Image (cartoon, rainbow, N blue to C red; front, side, top):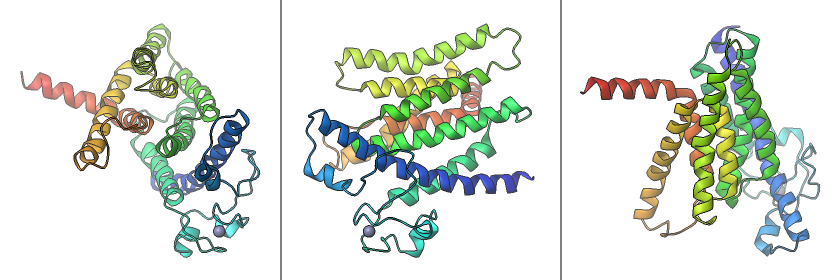
Amino acid sequence: MSMLSFALVLGFLGLFFGSFAGAMVWRLRALQLREDRGAGEPVTKAESTQVRHIKRTKLTDDRSVCLKCGHRLAWFDLIPIISWLQLGGKCRYCHKAIGWTEPLLELSVSTFFVVSYIFWPYPLDSTIAILQLALWMVAGVGLAILFVYDSKWFLLPDRVMFVLVGLAALFSLTTLDGLENPLPQLMNIGMAVIVLSGLYYLIYVFSRHQWVGFGDVKLGLVLALLLADWRLALLALFLANLVGTLVMLPMMLSGKLKRGAHVPFGPFLIAGWLLSGLFGAQIIDWYLLFTLGST
Ligand SMILES: [Zn+2]
């Protein structure tokens, strides 16, 4: 199969994985609110209303419902992008707006699959090498769920995180393939974890849980294992802060974001990870050339 046709297949697959991610976001939310209520934690009326139609919260349940009217959705309501466009972004049954999250998530995961495949920095010349890219992509779907969840509700659910830790650890193991002496690469992975997760742990402890949550520490671990290189981890951290600043500065200047307001950092970390994982080697080369060339 040519590279182009394979990219098209991946883009198509990505739409369905994005659709799955969208469904998971809401099921996880319904599950979390149910557990919060069970544990006696306050759940506002607005929060419960948002997920009131999700009765079955089994994550593997294949039946999706409209969040507004609770009507069970048929297969032709769930075709990524197409259904949404055909219905003008509204529910077929109650005609209320579905929202932008679903189609954007479908397009994002699809783009993520295609871009990861095209710009993958390592040769795909063995089964392990292909498995490595597959693990990266599947982990990306989990990270897409976290991205949306953290943006909406400032939380990184453990259910997704634990699956991701497993996937990311497997990814790290694949980087040891074919090495005569795996020790240097093992230390490299360990340093990546210290850079991304260790730093967040220190901030978490010293800010007394105010600046970052423990979810960010766990996310740092996942992303470090998925980069498996301390330079890439350091770059991811830098890029996350850069993207965060570029996004938040205009909001702060325009007064949309109040000083001291809670900002979820997970989405920025994930953006930094993606840029560093796919383009990190080039960015570092370019930077070295630039700094060494100018002296
Ligand atoms: Zn509806």
